[in-house]
Length: 349
Ligand code: SF4
Ligand code: SF4
Image (cartoon, rainbow, N blue to C red; front, top):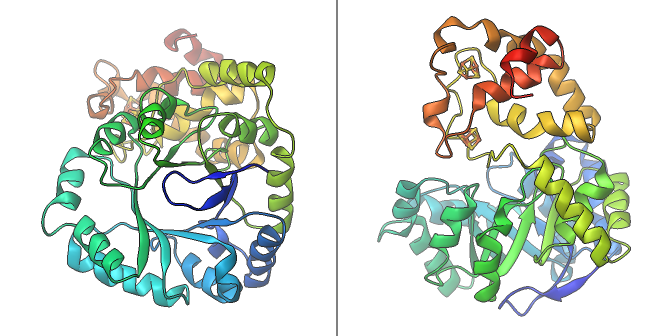
């Protein structure tokens, strides 16, 4: 485990943070044991969100009595000031604390959303007011479009930024991380396993660990998860390993999908296009985690149906939605060719 100054916050942060998003899916005793084990073994950063079901309550019930031992980050998805203010107060109650270290304005992906949060009645005003009242200490922003986040942080309104950084999503390295580093902003990376789809775990954790970030939040639900994540950060990454990991990220990230979700719901066949885009190369080259394999088995028929969906044969319905103009149909066909070589001639490979 590495410890660094978390940007301008004055907090010394552990390189591994506890992502509490999936705790609501496990028994409370298991969640409590995992959180306490993490604190006992050097993790001092806990990340949650008001939107993660009862994750905030689980934190309150499990570790509120150890509040001084960790930096507590949560998020509001609200866009206007009144609703954001109410949500901040609710988060404080749920987590049984009288201050939040970091409030992140959550999942800002569109220009109109950013304008909304920053206007005079926007969520940012609620965050400033909560800061004046001592309810929060720092303000951050999260999103899935790294090049837009790089622009949005330029005015210095935020103390921290949270972004995807993984072997399949290395894009924050292009502009966002250098921009945030120049401003000495706190930099938090998330989703090293891309939602539990990609492996191997060791490499998936060590890639973001090797990059210019302060803390990597990894979604954990058990003491075993915490042990595996801590073990992956036991050794520092040397130059040779870093180059190998960066090469692997360049290969696995060649799909270019940022998971911005602009295409969400656009497929009449119900295909979760970003999941296919992001994981299909991993499936071929590195192997998926069991959750990823299960996802493919459950979605096999939908993925295959893309090939025969007549309205998309000349002009794929999904593709105009993508701000990066990615060849989404080809990527789905490539995933389908894993099941049936009939689709191979229509894929890129
Ligand atoms: S091309 Fe395939 S993935 Fe895209 S909308 Fe059509 S059926 Fe869905
Ligand atoms: S395919 Fe394009 S629109 Fe869909 S999530 Fe990826 S980058 Fe965004």
